[in-house]
Length: 364
Image (cartoon, rainbow, N blue to C red; front, side, top):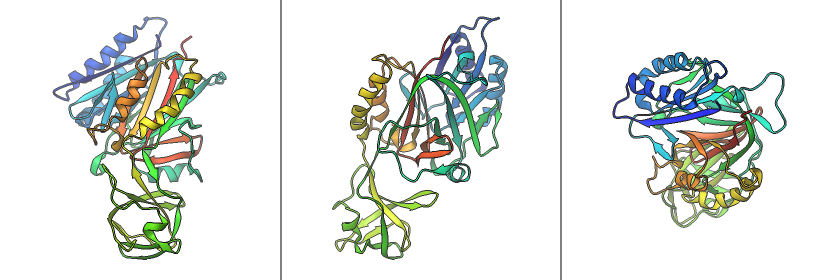
């Protein structure tokens, strides 16, 4: 066996329904009793299953005979060409021994891909370095897909590691993958480089780099839609975001929270069809990377605003699926997504980011 991915939607979030999906995944994998074993399991649920996630994880361990059960609850799931969020849904993916990261070393065309979920942004700066600058390419040198797993209004989502509810800050698993390609879709347009705040007063940003704030930050004359302007405040260990509430005629910007003199800031607005532009940059590189063949598997982590749960008219996810019709997908939506390369966060967590890894099965 190599792998199997099953996802199903239900009217009720019950243990019996969850067990059905787990059993379907094991059956779909077509295990040969004496020669095959499951080395990794990804277990993802919508928040409807949160109260019984421990029981689901334990059943998963028992049924798959695998302790490496990883996952948890998230705002939404992607599987079999659909986004699931409003109704109870569960996704189970089982991976055979070919996907186990080997102690004796990794072949040159293989790589260890880490999947990581954490609860809040502080975990990143506590455990990893933040890259000084972000990559200017949609193809990113990285080995980790990361997701901030909390939901809307900071709702806590339970996570699973080694078949148990995880109380640790970082919840992760590793897969051995063949010929991986990691891609990033930002979903933001930055209007200028970061510049220093010269003058501010409470919630009003008056001057930046000794110019009127709106001029220095290349502010448009009105708020773009569907999501308005946001001010990025750059810190030593990351960033924070402040919505722009008003654009005044004298060039002053009214903010939802104050900034301080000396801070570095820049404006950005969300680009609802960014993926249409970015995917044109992806595809020549993807086709070359996979020798004009479709990648077998894709794992997608996306910030909440990049999914159809937030904007019904925004087809980012559908666009990705349409360009990879023969690829099997595992997708999960949390508050923000990011990419790591070793001990460095190369793309910081943002709720507009879409990060994905395309790869083939290392089946032998």
